[in-house]
Length: 128
Image (cartoon, rainbow, N blue to C red; front, side, top):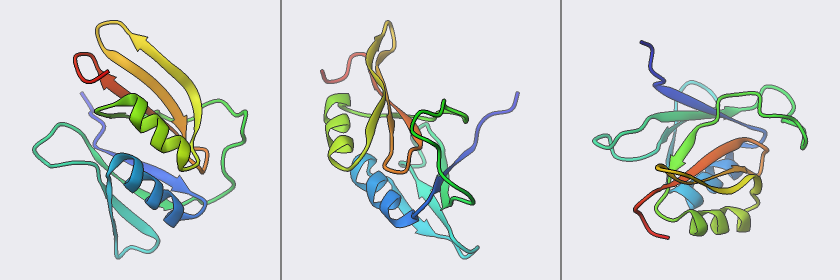
């Protein structure tokens, strides 16, 4: 069985997205010596999850009405409402409105300021 071990975010302008994900999800970014590439630390190594990278987008970004054309990664958040509010204030938009997934939690998809889709989930039994 093959498991996902890394993800990448493509950015038209890397620094604004680095600032966005740092503010909204608390991720840290470290510039890698291999050109315009940043390593993303999404949380402590002892917690479940994967880390990723951010790079300069090689071509134009997704159009506003374009369907999702990549895997959607979903981040576990303590409060979906607070995270959505912070993301919207920083230029995100709703791609899939907040909805309850029975037995799992509350889920929403947002588009970051560069049009990339990311899922946010607040697991049942936390907050709300």
